[in-house]
Image (cartoon, rainbow, N blue to C red; front, side, top):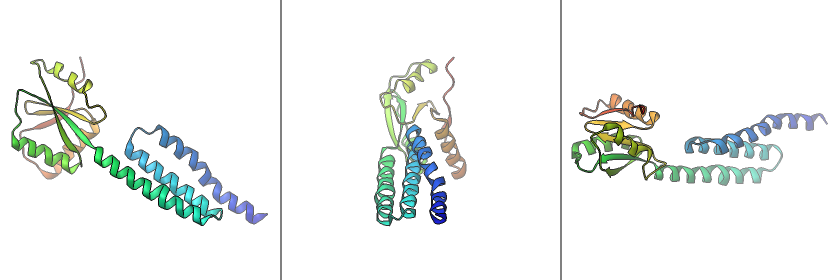
Length: 181
């Protein structure tokens, strides 16, 4: 009786983690966080299977449920990562600026997709392209004159960090999209 109680007491904290991780997984909006939660969920389930005497099920869960599904998620997430850069179709971007942007976003493992739009003389009007973009889901940026306005604050932080660390000289500046007035 004492041994049964001890093994149940060892498993109980892990059993409590399963629903918590399941809820975090379902509610997560970040694919990377979802991947992490799914990996932990599979690992803890495998640990529970091993503790209750089902090593074959535990091994299957580790190999298929955790490793294989995580690998597939990583490949899928990485292949879908791109940044949409809205540009004025009447203004050409220099090859130097294109190479510069490619090197910055390349370090973040992001592909650049240029979206040509007809810009107006009113700067605020141009920012509407970002909210009504045809390519929803990817982070967006707007390249106007020599300034790139980046929609996602986390992406802006990462870009500025790369520029600062690598001391990449260029006339382009990166900033957050101004709040609508």
